Length: 87
Image (tube, rainbow, N blue to C red):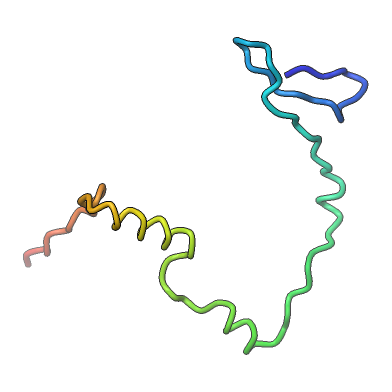
């Protein structure tokens, strides 16, 4: 990283081999993030119930699973089946 000590608004991440700037890093405003202002949440129980329905995996995970299934490869991970305990 290269930055002037007196101005942390200009911080750049450098590639150690080529000394080229890879990206700019912006400062984190901890006071602004901790001021307590959050978006309003509805207190209507019907609206909360609609937003929390369980329709299976999350949308991004569902897309990843569909893309993997489209390749035709066998599953990369099979969960271990616990044998039934004999009494």
